[in-house]
Amino acid sequence: MVVKLILLVIFFAVMVSVGMYSRKNATSVDGFVLGGRAVGPWLTAFAYGTSYFSAVVFVGYAGQFGWKYGIASTWIGIGNAMLGSLLAWVVLGRRTKVMTQHLKSKTMPDFFGERYGSDALKVTASVIVFIFLIPYTASVYNGLSRLFEMAFHIPYTYCVMVMAVFTAVYVILGGYMATAINDFIQGIIMLIGIVVVIAAVLNGQGGFLQALQTMAQIPSDVPLTQGQPGAFTSFFGPDPMNLLGVVVLTSLGTWGLPQMIGKFYAIKDEKAIHTGTIISTFFAVIVSGGCYFLGGFGRLFDHPSLYQEQTGVIIYDSIVPHMLSTLPDILIGIVVVLVLSASMSTLSSLVLTSSSTMTLDLLKDRVMKQMSEKKQVLTMQIFIVFFIVLSVVIAWNPPTFIAQLMGISWGALAGAFLAPFLYGLYWKGVTRAAVWASFASGVGITVSNMFLKYIASPINAGAIAMIAGLIIVPVVSLLTPKMEKSGVDKIFACYDEKVTITKKRSLEAGES
Image 1 (cartoon, one colour):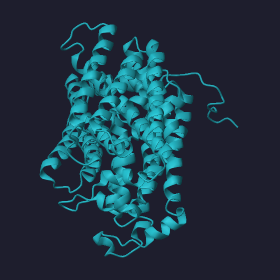
Image 2: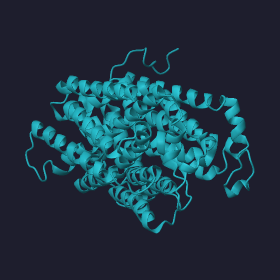
Image 3: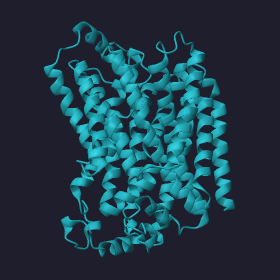
Image 4: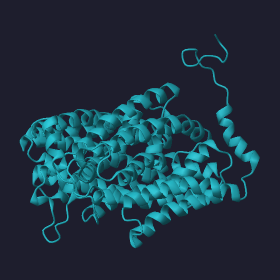
């Protein structure tokens, strides 16, 4: 217990120290929200990765999908790395940086307002962000609760409150730069921690080959496999179609999440984008791939405590904590700091995104006229406290499994925003009506499915909401009135602006 507490104290002391150090970068709105748009590749890549992966992945998703799909759940981590990180940086990175800087937009709702010339779109997007980031935040707290109860045997309520206070302190003090530096430190902990934990857990099962051999003997309870053994060690697992739905939601979802896209707003330059792409992909392969790979061995730790007494239903969120409960104290301490790192980095990104959206997109020039830079920063700091308090209250009695909470949040946000954001960066033909249609379908599919349950899994509902948006936006754009050509041309002119570049970065066309 002493070792675990010492590790926690050191961790929190470093986080607050970084907040104090970053205060000088948080005096202006641009500095507080985007780090002055001059954040380097390592900080940006780690900020992207640590915002991506939290206790939701390590405890909730790894446990639930490792149990359902066995070793094949590793495909989710590979999808996160290739589609959610590598391709997201390649397709969105440069264009997001160029267009958002040209439009002077600081948030995703601000982008929609400026790109499509509609204040109503901006306000609606900001409301969607605020509402649907709350279940995501609650899911992060929920993931931590299981781990803290296993490691410390103290009430989850106190753990949540302490974590919330420290997150608020360093985000309020240092803004985006504090979160980026802390994300880098937390990312290093995550990289080392996940490798150590996998090695320790598999070693406890006789090594990788022995663990795999034991897994191969377990009969599958999925109807597709008719109870045959070996499904949990097969290439695509016992249920490939539902596995694909999880890969789509958790990978493509990042393309439409405001807390993820905001990282591209803040990146420094071209070189930072190239370097950041490589670092971010490597980070995702190790952390996400490692989490799902570890979760894939969950059935080796089958135990009566994992099931509800009355119904016999498996408690997915308890699987990974139970797997780790047999580790030595020092390793449990590392795990706690690992998951705390992942979660606090995600929480800081969520509260900063939500507070900046509420201040800059809803209050500024509407409720509060003529807000000075200082007043805008102060308002964002107040909203950070408000958002953290609200999410803590919800987290004290979280309504459902972690994966379902996150599925609702990602499904609504990415379902609404992904298509109009992606097409808006590349295609001049997107219309306002198409953006409204995407907002309606993304939120509509996710929310209606919460009550009607016409799609069995909230995860699949979220994936369907995203794909629906990608189809709806071009179709509606072709059928509805176009935006004024001169205005759209002016927006896209930012891509044609001439810049001077060295031959190290680019060869001239036709040069031999």
